[in-house]
Picture 1 (cartoon, rainbow, N blue to C red):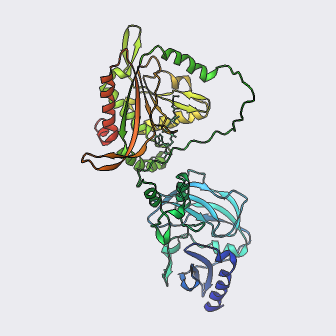
Picture 2 (picture 1 turned 90 degrees about the horizontal axis):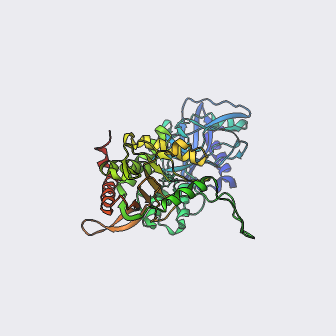
Picture 3 (picture 1 turned 90 degrees about the vertical axis):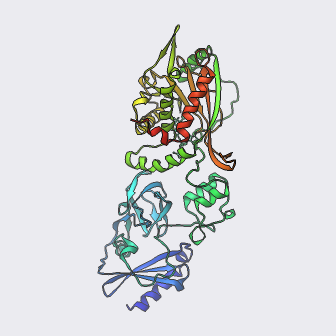
Length: 475
Ligand code: CAO
């Protein structure tokens, strides 16, 4: 078949509704062979701007009903690996070319990978949260005979091809758009979370795409410092209104809370609140989060930094890490910091032991373990025993202030509110964007003076507002 005839056939194929509906900035229409040279035809939105890529020295063969590995191709921009965020297909699903396969997140962006085959999904090679390298197989797809020829194309794509005409070519074929406003699924999700319509937002991305930054600008936030609104899974069971009163014995974890809180009533609580500007910490966590996830599989939240900084501040104010024993005050050597943990079974207070000897990564690992154990009802008595100080991060659920109740025999507890982006004045009197977290302290006023609590809180504030200062005290 001569080249003109082939191209004519491909144009005819493009006119089919399944292709004309596509909104990608370009589509790879077909693979064909001329004189032993494998060629791809890429088509811009307008068929007039067809682009031809030629790959040399490639010989195709026809295989019937072959299972082909669909690999993660080179997304460009130096991206070497991605994290799988979501699968849009399951084993057994029929897929067509350009159907969404999965959403992946690189260190730069979230992109949707679309199928380049018509066929049946046979295997997913990664789970959500897994990291896939460029060249790794994402899914196996069983394809029919003529498709089998196409999928034998190596996955290196554009960089290994000779571009004969690059007019109007955009980037790798992994972006997808769904409707009038162009945006990646992650951006759409962000818009939905903030209840804004994409069509109201001024798009600054390529080809009129709405970017994450556009949404942040629209809602008055920008850059990595965005704190995603804490997501709390909705209750899994629907609450049905009670037809009549129901009596339930106080038992289990609630019984433990009941007893210890009754004891707390005898403590004269002194309250002290302050607000911390965590802008630098927000940036720092943003920079480290992916790295930590990638290298250790751990989830890095703000808590490990706050726990470590608390320990450093306790070192300077040891009375806050003490316990009342009769007429004595026992200054505890270890900083065993309890973390109020909301579990499906009730509130638990497991503690991270000897925080004074732990790195931020160690604390992250222990916090991940305890959090997971809490969710699975696996927190042991040993995890709960021996606490010397407590922190309660209610901010992951919401709220600004709290009135935390001291967990005897401890003498102090801090409650962390949600980090909020708010206007504040800087040193020069300019209004600036700040990431404000309110922290509410309760101290046992029998042994803790307000001034001590304020000094301790100031010390912690110093570490958390400029986390680099912690470095000097880390071993
Ligand atoms: N402000 C803003 N974002 C916050 C936040 C805060 N104060 N605290 C947590 N977040 C973010 C996290 O950074 C994380 O974001 P990413 O998904 O981007 O990483 C997300 O919210 C979820 O965090 P998390 O809850 O999984 O992890 P954590 O380490 O921050 O907290 C734990 C762990 C165990 C303290 C928490 O899950 C919990 O149970 N909190 C409730 C405590 C409670 O009930 N207190 C009341 C006691 S009195 O009845």
